[in-house]
Length: 485
Image 1: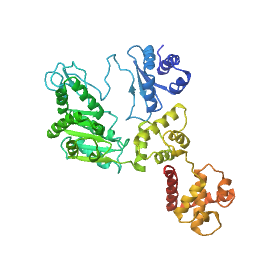
Image 2: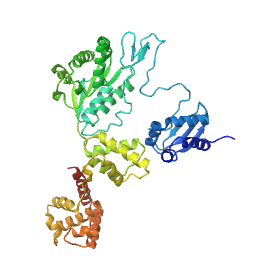
Image 3: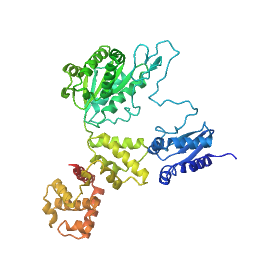
Image 4: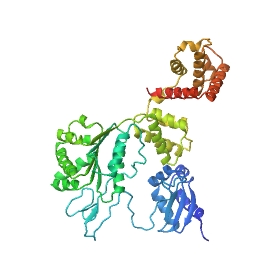
């Protein structure tokens, strides 16, 4: 009897059920649907990219075992992620053969039988490469880049436009622009590493003969220490001086390391004189670096120093929307705005909120809504616990309409006061958990019917007056944003 994809997957599930606890099986394996069986390849559909990555990280070995048990040693599994034609469609789990396959971006092809010079390769007999295992005649330098850091997912805004555009210019002509060195500086979590590596990845893509290397200042220092111990400083310097593009992250960590600075000074001079590209990142501007020799500081200023500022609200929303889209998930606009109002200064925290939100939604199968977002954000900021009160809304609206809060409590027919009172009631009903009766009591003892009438009046004005509608939206934003002030 010929088995189809459903029969094979059902058999796999019986094996998997014996290897994982019931809750994990229900969460991670029951939602999977078999799609196709073609020879030794079983394709299964998973809900989203986050789901796929979790399986790969936590259950890859038992999946291998179950697939090979059903399809033989050549059996492999592919993932299908709905509506993700550009990010993860049909991800292979097992290679077709038993030969280990290198991961993209980390391959180290050898040319042991090729005695001709190969662009982008170093002869290990003449120049020691601290990033490879000795013994291979000629190996390509691994750029040590994270291939997920690209210009495509580095969202441009006023906060980073100069640095991003300079990076693009360098990527088109490394070493051939006035931006050499490029020093990208800014606070933690604003994307310095992302931008630096995006430049490196773009150069690798466009110039296969260019030797690109990314290294943290800490790793660079540790390599120097090891080279000193092994009496191989000359080999170390020779290796770095042969690079076409050198990217050093967190240059401030060279502070007070005089020997490291001396060696880096010579490497910097040789690279710069030969028209090679140097890219540095720092948590502060070159002029503010402490414990760095003046001769290095002056060289850092030769090119362009570009700062990354905290992203504005629109840029934060674009960043989060992009990252959510990459994960194959949708997020309501009010949730997106709520997160971005509360996470203001750190893109890394935005990513953390997104990951937590996806994990919560996937693990406990909850819809992504405002309540779930509030639960998640409490782990990142404390001010989210501040409650929006009727009094606070009254104060904000009264300030906007230039009236006193007391006038909202008393009878008056002045139009601006009436509108301010009605709008305060509308916002109180929408943005607090207070009852209509309680809201009315906060406006001079009015009853719930007055609150209902006021809310309807505001809604009618919003439907017919776009300027008033924009005013309401702006006040809502101010209320939410004031939670973190």
